[in-house]
Amino acid sequence: MTLTMSLPIHTPVMVNEAIAGLQPQPAGHFVDCTVGLGGHARPILERISPSGRLLGIDADPEAITVAQAKLADYGDGLTLVNENFANVETICRQYNFYPVDGILFDLGVSSMQLDTAQRGFSFQREAPLDMRFDPRQELDASTIVNAFPEQELARIIKEYGEERHPRRIAKHIVRNRPITSTLRLAQVVEQVLGSKHGRIHPATKTFMALRIAVNRELDNLKLALEQAVNLLCFHGRLVVISYHSLEDRIVKEVMRSEAGNCTLELISRKVIRPTSLEIESNPRSRSAKMRIAECLKPSEKERR
Image 1 (cartoon, rainbow, N blue to C red):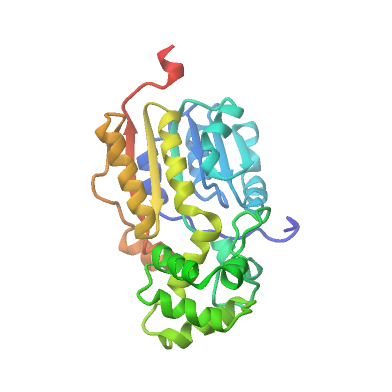
Image 2 (image 1 turned 90 degrees about the vertical axis):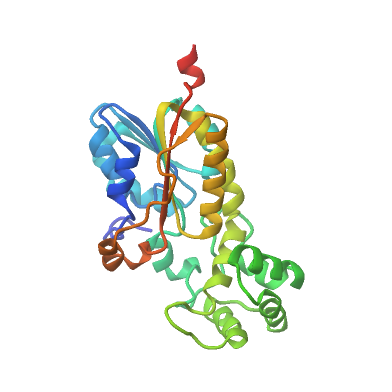
């Protein structure tokens, strides 16, 4: 990506709710574990500047490049790291960035990733089967689609996509190998499930399942949430925006477990959803769910 071109436009989800949940104050220290294009990072930086600091993490190097350009005016107040948030505790300790006042996760795929055809996230554009957040990793969607055994492919589609007909889809994929493009895979799935009905394309769940498997999203989320609790200061806030039931289930389980251990207090016992006005203006927000928790124990540094 060249920054001589216009920077991508991104509409962040539930910004007001996220800021209200994090409660950023001047001189605060915050971590945005999915900094993306800076949509949530900017309002955080606005509230903690000039002496506050934000650590932004993203597995996607293109997102880091764009965020750096969009948030350049915050100078030393911003540190950006191209890494997977599964390593958030190691990253924070490496940069001496703990304890922190708040940690944000905005899960899912960014607008830039969906709208960039060659990334292979969308079944609406012709592209290679990729779906990697981090292009440095070896496993991509093409490997799963064309090399994984039929039984394992069915398991992925069922477990991560919550698809009702995983075995039929997996069998038809195997019969039609090699499948090299997003549109061809969407066509193969459509041959099994029939043409589009309503607003959800028949290939939606299969594509989501492959993306989750490629990026180990659920495993990484659980690892990151468990580490995040260790990084928060006393009364520090954890805010998570998820987009499907599997993510939300992990968030809910981790938060409730930590609440049972008296480590966290659940600020929102029920999920917070976007307003009807936001959904109307940004349809991609319609499936968003936010959960908020507050740390009840001092960090190791605060105990010294």
